[in-house]
Image (tube, rainbow, N blue to C red):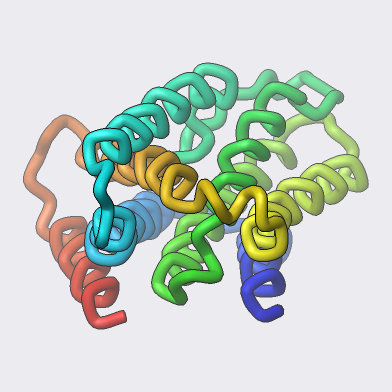
Length: 225
C-alpha cells in the first residue's frame, strides 16, 4: 500500500513546495533535476537492466523493447514538450488545461508504475524524479490564467496514474505474463528521460563541479540502495 501512497505523495510534495514557498532559485531546481536524472539512470542500470536480462533466453527481443521505450518517450515528448525532464512551454494567457501535455505525461506516469512493486530502489527513483517535475508543472500552471481548482484536479489525476500502473501490474495476471517486455519498455523510457536531464543540465557543455558532485552523490546513493 505504501507504494501507492508514496508515488501519489511525491506529486503533491512538489506542488506544495511551490504553493507554500514559491521557490525562485532556478539553479537549485537544476541541481535537483540533475540529482533525479542521475539517480533514475543509476537505478535503471543497477536494478532494472540486470533483472530483465536474468534467465532471459530472448535477450535481443528484450533489447528491441528497450529501443521501443526510447522511441515511445521521444513521441510522448513531442506532445509534452519535454515536461518529463523539466521543460514546459505554455501560453501564459491560456485558461484551459493543456490536454495533450497531461495525456502524454499520464501515459509516461502510468508505464513507470509497472515495475515499482518489484524494487524499492525504483520507487525511490520515481519519487525523486516526480518531485522536481511536479514543482515545474505547478509553477508553470500557476503562471497561466487556469483556475486553481482545475490545476489541483489535473495534478490529482496525474498523481493517480503511476499507482494505477502499479495496481494493474500487481493484480492483473494477463499483464504479468508480459512483465519483462513492459519492464524493458520502461527501461527505455527511463534511459531517455534520465540521460536527457543529465545532458541538458550541463548548459553550454561547461564543466560544473557542483553538478558533477550531485551526479556522483546520486549514483552512490542508488548503488547503496
